[in-house]
Image (cartoon, rainbow, N blue to C red; front, side, top):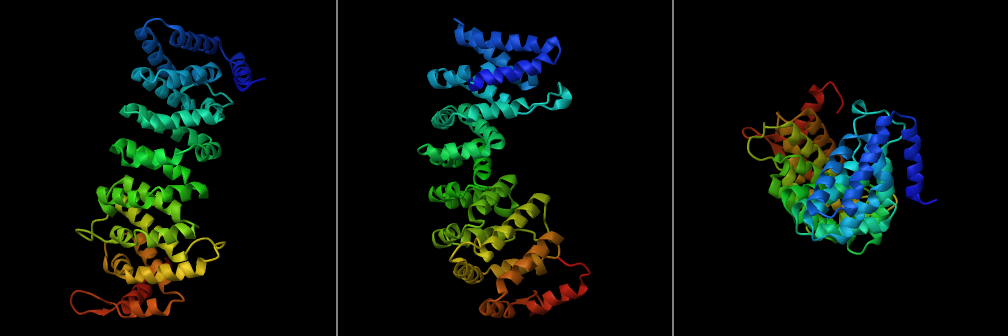
Length: 389
């Protein structure tokens, strides 16, 4: 028994346990799909596509019915009707709706999750993923946008399968990386997708770095205003952290290609040092996590971990990271407690077992008027703080 036939059996079981309204929706979805497939007039087909997208977006039963019979029709449009941009847009938007969970409070409480089943069905064929990636080369903005949304929905529901499929498709990662240089809305969707893709997949992490991820990430961060930027900066730093977490070779590439200077600019406070929005706080905490990842030097399994850790710590201090950390942890009285604590912890990690870095910290003086040694300032903070950071 093939997958779609089995899916129809599940749908029939669910519909059989519910009221007649579900079978009416089943028939309605079938009629719309028939019109899309066999309609003679383009306007009729487009109207049917619009109605199908609407009903699938609002009804779990319609999602189930669509999963049983709709995928071959939609994929056929994406493959054979590329010149009809409206139909391609409609097919993609319908697929996104079919993979988007519906609030159960608004509909029947089925024991199965139609959106999850639909994602599983669509992702089982590697050819489907290849077809979707090819759509990223289309000129139409909405075609690229809906395609990225669809890939993100697939990744959310079937991460391992999508990761495996993308690795087997020539230039699959390259096409996604190209989207980072696209218009802002598409760039942001691609950024989220790459963040999901790189969380655990080490092979994908390596390819993404090879495709120039570091340069693109820091270019976007700079364009968005550094730590003063919005959630896009947070997403960029999360992607960066995915690429260097437990990955010493990527840390070496970062250090020896573009260097740490672009990263230092994120930690540098601009304008009024007392202005810390919630988003700026999140961005700084994310950047401090990046710093700690570099300080730790990679995975325990990496043979060169100790050497990489030592080189990272030495280079970071040479790049004046202590000045930024002292500003965040000691001098900026308006910095949120969480930021100050993490900054001080980073200072401790930088000097632990590193005499030269300790000497560098000991040589620092703080204050605009009468200055005092940085170590004295840190000691005063420790003595007047009742809670452990």
